[in-house]
Length: 92
Image (cartoon, rainbow, N blue to C red):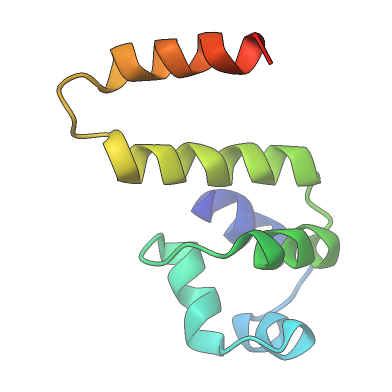
């Protein structure tokens, strides 16, 4: 996700300071989003996708993937748990 954000910002010719100002977010947060040291909130993802003209679904999938990896990426049974979760989601 960090690459998506930085690339989109640079393609729009915006500085982190400008993005921060337009979204009323601290500039340090924007830099942390781009470096991967901090994750945006769901609301911030929505606002970033609009401002940077990134497909919302693409950005949300990247955001969710990172949340999942952060929570269970180092767990021994992560893959088995994900497979069970996938089955439950499909059965809804």
